[in-house]
Length: 380
Image (cartoon, rainbow, N blue to C red; front, side, top):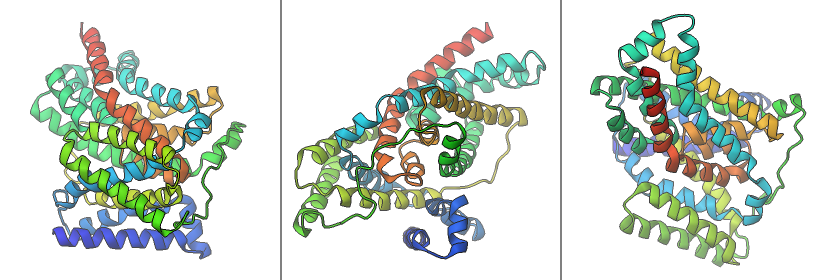
């Protein structure tokens, strides 16, 4: 299965790249609705579903976390200039934080509203203690697996409820990712509707010379990245610390080293993001989905309200609406999927998606602790 999964990922990446460059009118119409990179997520899932394969535990997932994802981080972050950070400003961060705050407090807001009309949600979520599992969703969505496990212990969620939440989390995030791909493709239309004129300067040309400053400099740039990633594998154990460290190193290299090939980094980072998406697609599984309807509906409304609040914040700030799905994926999807969704709109914004994802990873546990506190107040 390990060899098969590698072949499947390679063929998927090639298919996505060919599809993205296809000029046929019918293909272009399809890509207006479904971004090419989304096929990197869907193709492996279709293959595993059709042939009833379980590729969720192949070794490729470990290699992706240990090498491919760190390499993508340093590639993308070293393509970011400090001028870009200044041009974007604080507004995307404020939109992102509004999304985080909504994830943390909206369960209590929704529960309070529902309790005015029916007791079914309160009986299910409070009475049967599903709230303890829902708290772990806050950690999973904002902080990732580590925060989710920490909040499981803090909330006292039972193993049975935690297992149900794990399954639902997997399905909801997969569906939400597909939905965000759709939303970001329509950002310009939404901007036009709300009369938002916010634009970002184009720092890197669309036609990229991969041998900027000569092949020797490109080789040195690539070799430096590989050496840094290999060293981080042997000397840095914490995944979160590794991502933060590589992001900082990438920023320093891209802004200090004069011969650094930014074009190679942004293009190579895009390829690596497609590869990561294809590997994630190996885990996509919608089977064994048996969860109380009230909990499912509650969680869906929770996610939708998170998105609406961010849209309102972006509108108030007159910020390009493309930042809303980016900020949502940084909150809910994280370091793997936020840059992928961003790439479907503007490759140059991928570093910002990574920065927001890192902020998400750092703060997830604390948002979850706030949710636990609010649920405790609700119970009393």
